[in-house]
Length: 74
Image 1 (cartoon, rainbow, N blue to C red):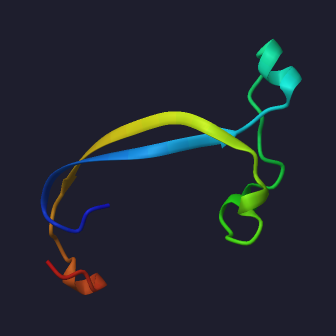
Image 2 (image 1 turned 180 degrees about the vertical axis):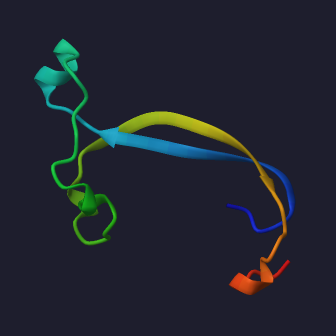
Image 3 (image 1 turned 90 degrees about the horizontal axis):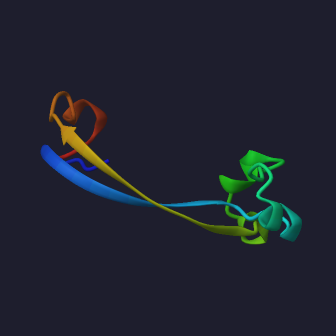
């Protein structure tokens, strides 16, 4: 999230777990991570098989209220 006040457009690249060959051919349900916490850490993340899932564009309006309290300099 931008710390500068005003309107911002942010584009985020997304991914999803890559299914097995059979799941991709049959289009059966989306694959899910067995242990979602793996995606948060840096150690085992390289073992994940993923594929691009497109992008999401967010339009954010940032108000500079009490930001100094949280250590954010404007």
